[in-house]
Amino acid sequence: MNIQTTGAIWDLLIGIIGPLIGALVGVYLGFQGDDRHRKELEDKKRLFFKVLVLHEIDESIELLKPKESTLIPIIIPVNAWHSPVNSGAMALFTHDQSIQMSDTYSQILLYNYIAERVIEDIKTSIICSTITPEVVPLYPTFKDDLDKTKAKILQEFDDLKGQLETIGKHGELPN
Image 1: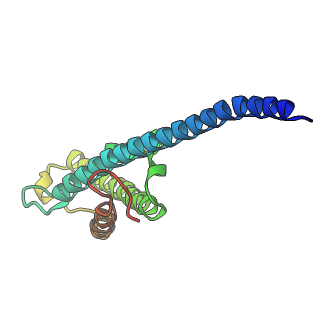
Image 2: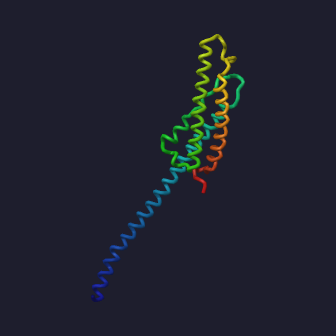
Image 3: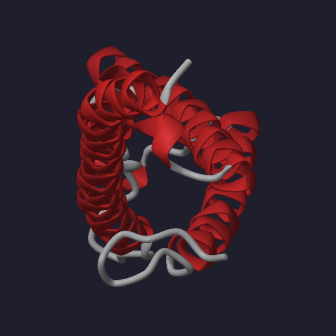
């Protein structure tokens, strides 16, 4: 090989490698930008569901506060709990946060089930007698179960609020 042939081969390699490196760097930067954008969207989704669930927790705590005006139990709303599950957003939260949300949701469902049984007992008692709802005695087992479950739910709400508060104001997870 002479110098002219080596120079031609070198020019050919530079002509191929230059654009190839440029293309690879461009693809790499494109993937980095896409990954950064995806993380921002995940942070925004996480923040949205955090706010949604915290709002539902606050509303539920307010509903569960004792009120003298009624003996009929309140059914806790669960719409905000369905949203992260049905949308797949539970995967955006940490393992511990997801477990805590699941435990809290289970306690809410148990409470609502017992509350519905108590309401049915009250309705049955009212239909079968002339006693007013204010003086209808609750079935003792259901009432005890309802009180125990209510206490568990309030504790679950506190625990979950503490975990969700670790999510940053822009939706980022703690390090």
